[in-house]
Image (cartoon, rainbow, N blue to C red; front, side, top):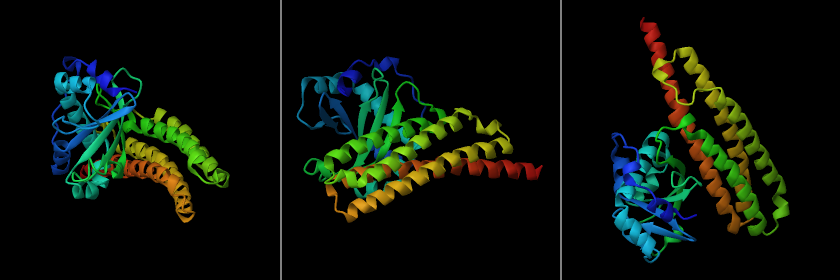
Length: 301
């Protein structure tokens, strides 16, 4: 993938205007310290918040992006932070580590074959004092998905997250074959994870197709809100079951000192716990509050 080339093709005048939204102190500080990591062929290029090229050394195409597409880069940073504010809990559940690192967050953008439109974004944090000298020690805080031409997401973006979990489970199995000392000893774990992810993907697809993709909750009555909340909670239960299986696998790998592979399982579990938190806070949590508010209005009448 070559995100540098994709972004060079974007005309900033064609990007849809972003509505201004209020940002709390956490998101404002992250915005000011947000670094972009973009692919230039096989090489990842790290840009500072002012678009200085930090890693690796400069090349002509990266320099062209910085000099001729600064408006695009500004738009991307604003889009990323607004998406984190509205559709994600990554900053909230990782705020301690982010604050310890003086609010430095790295956004690694990988295009998803969309002509520069849609991206999977992996977020990391690292101490500014060790950003260049110990870049490999950065802390993974999670992944998100953005569409530069459409801010609103269907189903809170759940489909994209679950598709990523399914894809990552396949990659996990492939890495296990390469990294584990005795991969056959763990075949049952890989099989259980595959089966659980497959069930999660199938059940969530059925559930989501029965729900409004972008509902106006203010216009729904209490009964509809309760039903929608219950359906999303069901998806969350599948995630919790999968998370338990992955956690058991991770604990065994640590006991067996499979250091070369366990970090991949830990990263996978991080994606799971982040998605569970998204349900608990942004989806079921907010729906539960709306149900209480709707019930209060009914009782007042």
